Length: 274
Length: 274
Image (cartoon, rainbow over all chains, first blue to last red; front, side, top):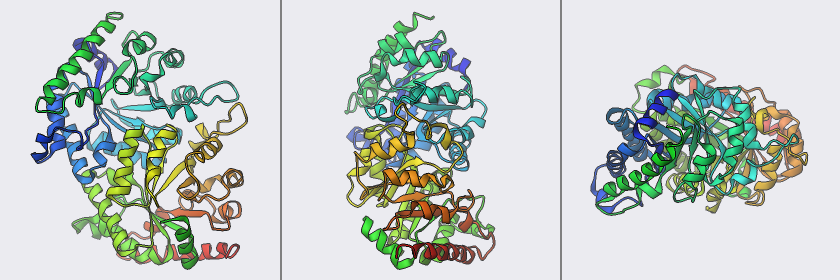
């Protein structure tokens, strides 16, 4: 999916919501545990209920890997279900990968060739040759970690170098030598508030993937005020606040209602540009 | 496995070699492709042939993930085979993971609880709360990326901050607030030569996992001159140069011979401390 198509979907659905599929066997409704594949059953129901209100899904690989082979099977089935039944959804594998060149190339092959996923989150620490193998696939995206939503983001990402540039700013600037805003996005946590102003100085047109709304406490309104571009430029993720809003038999319906509430707030924010 | 046991193994085997199980279905001998699980068949043969000459194995997860469910099965079987048949080997999952706290905790559960692996490589970019969930398991290890062996390591890891400290040095220093040398190691590429001197100023007693010998061109002798401690303090990895030394029916035997050659060089280097 290219940038233009992504923006078309945002306009059509009046939403820039990404639903995070952080599916944990310990947190899904009990009645699903009798299914053959409870994780996939949960994801399928969540997807069908929330799809009208979002434009992207983001399974976090950690949750699937923690269940070994069963988890990988559920992950592959979820990706396949999205491709087949909701082909307008942008699929992000939240993997935070990054390794030496030949190894990153293996990861790229997994996500982009085998699974035909749209985007992968990548960690920048190992530099250019750990990122570029992901950039050779037409219509696919790297979403590079820039300024994350967690407390530990302060440990290294805010380190200021001798020229006064912070590490996350260097990541934003340097990585633009490798790809432009048609194949690269950045992760910027919603908890970072006004930092979006600084980020837009360096990356005025890139899409930003924004975790941290909801359970982590970030403000949608603040993110939009400082981070929205004329083409929206934001994909805001919510995981736990939507998928675990209800732990009973009505979990999917409730998740749909929660997603709709967020969509309505987003529709309000989009009035500034549409 | 604790630090003392690891050093005992090094002394007993006169080796600090780690064999990297970067097993690629496209590179293994053709006659294995008729096996039910060619990747595991390859790993098993390589392990049995090289085990006398090494003290650790390091499967890189990228190679297994690229084959989806089949790859995960092969990875789990390999870990299980090592635990059962070679219980003195230190097993490193080269995963380069790191995510927000609750997600890192999921990864830690996978590797340390489900698979009972000894160590996981972790990326430092997201800071403290992305690393500490891996540190709550007695006898298990975090191997944090510090200064990697690839060209891109220069992009961010060598950035000097306003106080004159380079990013990899900050990672070494800061992370010692989270754990000591009994549960943390660092990745330092063999290609970084004299940088080992600088690293030993900050981390004088930590074990370092050293990739980059062999195919990537690092020098064992140089690594030992600047990086060896009185308890060895080095685990040197070789992957391609050993496991793909021979692509015919005699692949395992040749891998064993190559591992033995490296072990002999290591025995020579260990004379300085034993």
